Image 1 (tube, rainbow, N blue to C red):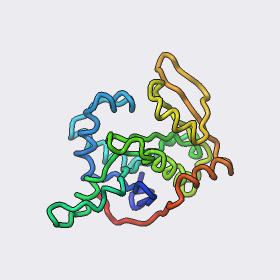
Image 2: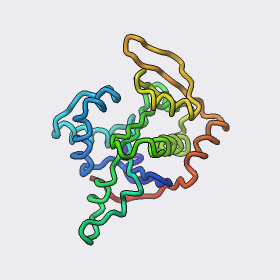
Image 3: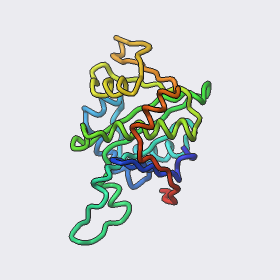
Length: 208
């Protein structure tokens, strides 16, 4: 989405950055995992196809994507030499988080979170990343309702969305999927802001 291509969101545990071309090789390696393909209902793509997908996501007015960086990994140096921004970000990548819009209702967004790195799971990175993009969705994109579609066997994600106040609105045994919704009320925003106490947005000029 063009509107977020200059936006970086900082939190306590994670930083959300626009999905750039230098992120693609690591993202491509993640998506070779059968587990992640199943959890995200994705088909494996070639590296060339992944680059094309990254470019299309950047231009797509209906999809807002951020790469999730784990802050504790950002200051790692190699052999005493300070890494480039691209190297540091690639080394700190742990997942991605998205919002999807439809032409019919620009105030309703489907949201999804993927923490691909096993070492970053169970540490609150996914929760903060999800709440950060939801807060961005409300404050910048005027979202008033969030929707999540989660595989029935993805229990950690189901628990996370329930914790944030989402409620199941339908369930498909055929597709083995639960659809959950959250209306943006004052109470919902209290929860979202409570999960993002260090939330800050800044402009970045990195576009690739």
